[in-house]
Image 1 (cartoon, protein in one colour):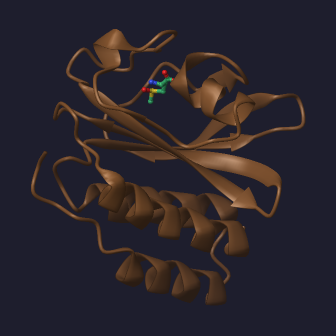
Image 2 (cartoon, rainbow, N blue to C red):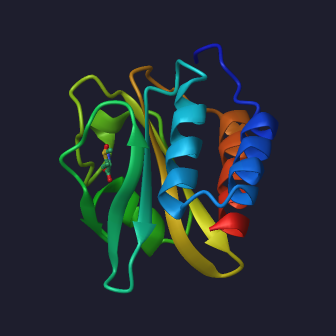
Length: 154
Ligand code: SME
C-alpha cells in the first residue's frame, strides 16, 4: 500500500462550487479526475467513463496518461465488468485479472467505482495505479464519496 488516503471533502466542495458556477458536465468530470489524481500515489491515472444508452462506456474526461480505450462496451474489461455486475471492482494485481484491458504497461492495480443515482448507473471513476495492491477499503470509501457527489450534480 502507498501512503495517501484520499480526503473526499474538499473535492466534493470544489465540485459543488463548480456546479454553482454552471460548470459543464465535462468540466465537473475533469475537475474530479484532476483533484483525485493530485493526491499522488496510488492515484496514477483517473478516467471518467460515462454510460450511454447504447451500452458503451465513453471516456468523457481523464487526468494522467492517455488511453486508447475511449469506448468500452458493457461486459468488456474491468470497466465493463463493473457495469455488467453492478458493483465496484478493486483489482490488486491487473496481471492476474481476466479480461483486463491495458492502458499502460506500468499499471499494477486498478479500482473502478460506479457513479450511481439510486438504481441507475451513470458511469464510473476508473483509477489506475502504478503501485501493486494500491487501494484498500478506505480508499474505496473515499472515491465512492466523490462518485456520489458527482451522481447528485451531473
Ligand atoms: N483497464 C481498464 C481499461 C481502462 S484504461 O485502463 C484507462 C479495463 O480493463 O476495463
